[in-house]
Image 1: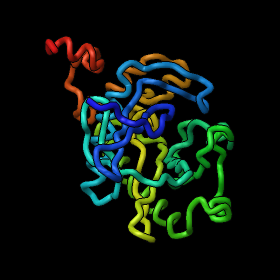
Image 2 (image 1 turned 45 degrees about the vertical axis):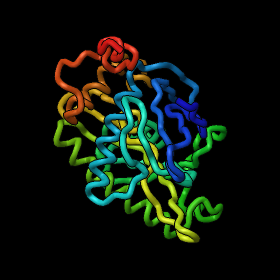
Image 3 (image 1 turned 30 degrees about the horizontal axis):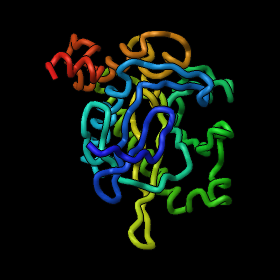
Image 4 (image 1 turned 180 degrees about the vertical axis):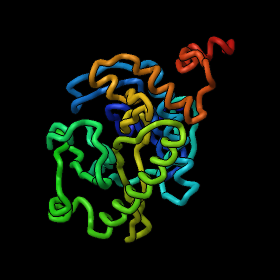
Length: 259
């Protein structure tokens, strides 16, 4: 097999040149980072779980007409995606006060917000992904007014869908991060959903107990990260009850199959 050309490597994923023009292969790593990569570690099998969970969610979103970069899953750790021009913003959708919002505003974590809040951060690791306003975004040309409208509309639409999806399996969707990209057609572009949706970029709490089922287990040294990600996959119907976590390791999986 010819060696694929690496396009980009981030904290949790690697992008490779795709098989056709306008496509990329997105590889999910087991690497885990927190606090703008100040804390680093590994969650065994995380990449496999996130690939599967993100595929499931993006497929469901596509079914209700949300435009995304997802094309299809290729294997346990890779999926084929559309190549987009990433809008340099992280869009944080908040339903419940938690994390940096609680610290910044002094609101007790777990407080249900009276309305969903959208926050924007500039994608810049060197600056610590600072919070920015719509005025900043428009002033510096990171997105146009029309693009901001499309981003906000899609973010709220995704939130409505995911809140119902997770509530149906006993999970409270506290907040989550989205990224968007531009698809160009000559001189015209449109905004579509990009990146991933998984326990890496969502806060997911058990609706009954409040147990954290996301990357906060890594951020806060709670342990049980793999089990939490597996629990989300199980509740979404993606991992059979009692499945051995070792199957998440591709080499072990191949050995079991005698290959």
